[in-house]
Amino acid sequence: MSTTTEKSEKALTEEQDFLPLLGTDFVELYVGNAKQAAHYYMSAWGFQPLAYAGLETGSRDRVSYVLQQDKIRLVLTSPLVAGGPINQHINDHGDGVKVVALWVDDAKYSYQQTTQRGAESALEPVVLKDKDGEVVISAIKTYGETLHYFVERKNYNGAFMPGYQPWHPTFKTQEVGLKFIDHMVGNVGWNEMNKWCEFYAKVMGFTQLVSFDDKDISTEYTALMSKVMSNGNGRIKFPINEPASGRKKSQIEEYIDFYNGAGVQHIAVATDNIIETVKALKAGGVEFLYVPPTYYDDVLDRVGKIDEDLAPLKELGILIDRDDEGYLLQLFTKPVLDRPTMFFEIIQRKGAKSFGKGNFKALFESIEREQELRGTL
Ligand code: FE2
Image (cartoon, rainbow, N blue to C red; front, top):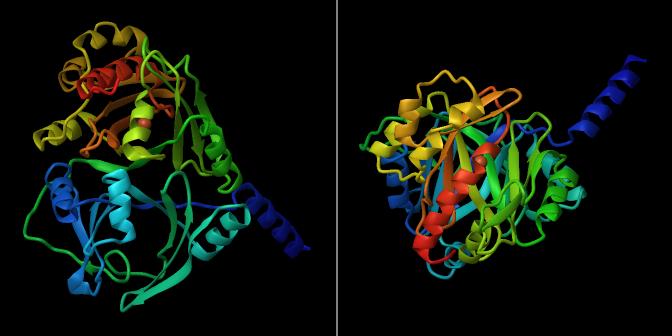
């Protein structure tokens, strides 16, 4: 009897969440010069060196630097030879996110569950071994040329994964207080938002948290639409944007033009102290979107009482928004690459679970100022 009950309960849990995700394992960017990119993320962003793979470790065609700050792991990869798929990726897209890797308990099961539901395979499950144990990885395709890896590392004690060696450069930097990835946003083409939201629902078991239409997210000139998809335990949140028509070019369309298709638009990273984090990032040379001082004239009327003094928020250009559950502080960098494509968001949540809808207008007017300077508005 008890076996039957356990079985049916297990079946129910699996039905509810057939793809349990423990968190984001790593984000891999394909870049033109991984060595210099690694230096930037260490010196400006306070990431710490973790692991390395390259000629010295037997990797003949690519080099990867792995950086870490608390739960955030970045992998920066460049080709070492001409004419390969990484070269083509960089040629097509510029520097950008290739892999959003998800940490799972069972990479083979995750692969089976998602491919059974229609995901296109990018890598069949493979066991990687070295003296520190084993890591199982598999991968499926998502929007554009972006991949989701499933990473199972419960039987591994090494720095990152087999094929990598610990990396201890003499250059030292301080962390800036970044804790974990709060959400990662994908930009997809015209009329493709629903298709990709359905992909996350059907193939990965995500549900929709919120949606914004072009009435929420438009200025006099440009517009976009967005839906936020979340996995069962809420650890993984993927908002999906598509352009909407306005009098001038949507910032999403600008992204799609320069990235040559769909891709990751921004990585939102969480901090417990946004004032100190942003001060440190600015000292390191990270550039943020301009927020007009007038934004602060009536912001407290809109969001109510907050714990922080307004003066440092205003000085640093940190935005504030509130929902039913609390408030949040956020701000956005300028694109961190040469093409106007990917950027970062710094976010501190004080109860709020939303994404800063109240700031969209101020934010997009700021982005338009930048687009105007680029001649792409
Ligand atoms: Fe965001």
